[in-house]
Length: 154
Image 1 (cartoon, rainbow, N blue to C red):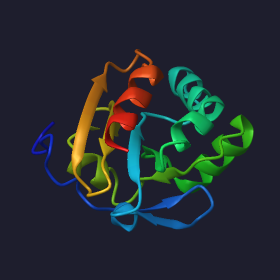
Image 2: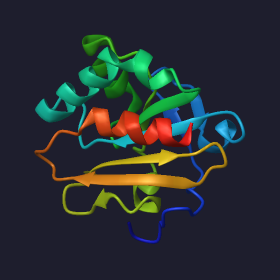
Image 3: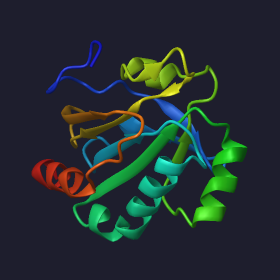
Image 4: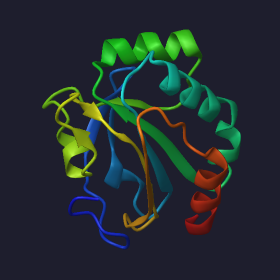
């Protein structure tokens, strides 16, 4: 996890979503747990499927006084087109510039491909990293396990 440890403070960040609104991780401290989905590319096959799965189960993810965010290095305009095309109604955050800075802080930036690895983190209400998983690029995530881990800290 490159400097991140379970139980340690999650790196704080402010990123712009698909609507041009800033979202700051620490703004949820004391209020909500956050599940962060890092994904390689908008519009790519596995990512489209994963984001659709989150969209379809969003009510389950939001049941526990939590927030769901997804981060890629795509520009905000691409994220808006992606969200509109796929009906994604949760924050898609752009780590476009400085390119991959937040991904690097979480230790998930793939220098060769210029994108985040397929990784997820659950951050509790105190801003502490409580769970992490890293999938190979072609492997989709187990959303049931994500929900289980989120419920454990909510």
